[in-house]
Amino acid sequence: MVLILSLKNDFTTNLVIDWLCFYEKKHIRINDSFAGVAFKSQKKYLKIKDGLLLDFEHISSFWFRKGSTFLSTAENKILEDENKINLDYAQYLLEQKHSIGNTGGAIKINKLIALNIAKDCGLNIPNSFLIDSKDELENLLMSNIEKKYIIKAKTNISMYQFDDSSGMIFTNEVTKDDLEKFPENFGSTLVQELIEKKFEIRSFFLKNKIWSMAIFSQNDTQTQHDYRRYNNDKPNRNTLFQLPSDIEVKLRLVMEKLNLDTGSIDWIYAEDDQFYFLEVNPIGQFTNVSFICNYNLEKEVAKLL
Amino acid sequence: MKFTEFTEMISRKKKLYPLTFFYLEEQKSSSSSFKKSKFSPFYNANYHIEPFYKNIHRLL
Image (cartoon, rainbow over all chains, first blue to last red; front, side, top):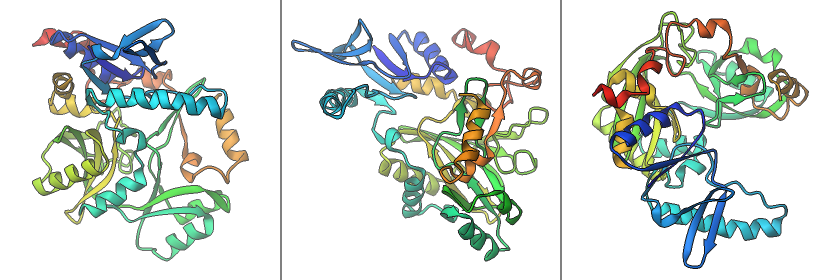
């Protein structure tokens, strides 16, 4: 039995399940999180929801696509400590299974740490700053007049769901003209030097294999700072791309150090003909890369489960 | 919570939020312009994949 943890609206999971059906692999998809764990005699069960248990022995492989494995619902610290032992044990049991995305790195991923590790592994990264006051930001902008800067989300969450709509955080350029609308102090913000690009690259990493796509977003003012500002009337040109082998070797090292066996990686190929690592998202979308480049990545995932 | 309630909360507690939240953009998925898009609403708008995915294995 292939166990999948995902979210209800994750379209990529549907596509992988299509392939699991094709390969006649039994599977069960759980959205959001597991309800808990149950122990009976010698048997250990994953609690799918109240009254529905899945024997750990029946789980042949596990794909952690999205969601949270377990949510603590204990009403106080004492019970939480008790509960944590059970949940950590269940997590350990899942980690013993053949799996994708279940190496522990996805839960702990931190964009700032990833940048540091990428730099340590020999990859170029944009000059990055954490700034929490207008004075500091002004100082940075005014003392580097010849350079441009962007602000971007520190977390891997850029879309927030609300009752009536959703909100999206894009990467935006910040200039001295923006300063007047900012408060004196604000939450620490990731500010990066803007890298002038020839094109962007989106890579999908799965068990040391890498598939990449070039995104020509720089010629459209709507998409030049963030290709996710899709121009529906005139979409960016996207095409298959092969990263140089030395860059792929360094990326494998980064993923190993981040304890990730899968993820989507954003790059810039800059005007200076250098590759710049931007970030890795362990639960990022890869169906766009798959469809546009005809990589059949969902099939690759299904084959490995 | 509604989108405007959240943005109002950011305005009241500006010191707590990173600057990126000041640029939060509302995405109304039910807006007519979204529906009229010639391309897929799912990913990067290059392919209209919805009619195909349900039976993708039958296309082999």
